[in-house]
Every structure is written in C-alpha cells, then in structure tokens.
Length: 104
Image 1 (cartoon, rainbow, N blue to C red):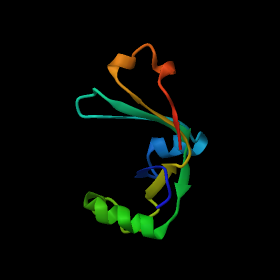
Image 2 (cartoon, helix red, strand yellow):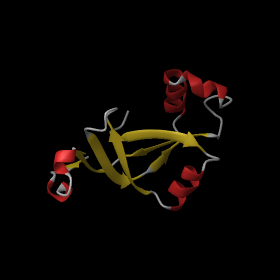
Image 3 (spheres, rainbow, N blue to C red):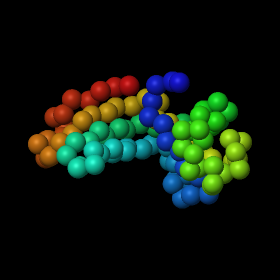
Image 4 (spheres, rainbow, N blue to C red):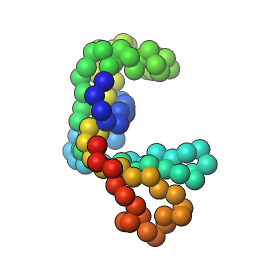
C-alpha cells in the first residue's frame, strides 16, 4: 500500500461531492480523551483499486450490509497522499504555528 492517510465514504454523501469539488482538506484525528491529536493537510485523490476495495470490506465487515460488494460504486476510497502533518496538544494552544510540521 502506498503512503498516505486513507478514508472511505459513500458516493451519495455530501462529503463526497464536497471533496470532488474541492480536494484540499485538513483533517484532525484525536485520541479518545482529546488530549493529543494529529492534524493532516493535503489534497485528496480518489482510488479505484479492486484489491484495496476488497481489503476494506474484509477489515470493516459492517460495510457489507451497506454495499453490494467491492465493485459497488457507492463505496468510495480516497487518500491524502502528500501534505503536512503535526501533532498538537492543549500545551500548543495559541502557538500551533510554532509546532514542527512533518512533510509526507
């Protein structure tokens, strides 16, 4: 699998249409206690990889109730292949511009 941050959604959802119209994103992934997070910024690319679609259905069996199989056009996979990321905590609040960025 190539480097990047991978996501999936349904092709009928608003977020899919928004990403198609403007692929520039910033996402925030938090710990359960919201005490540490990673922020990732970049541009998404949509993937049409049969092996990846099959793997997604195997790793997330709940999706099998929502799609007809790995070829179902409802299943949409995208990734942020390049961009910048940084870790952030409340100690960095009001100073996040100073937090070192990691290019990927």
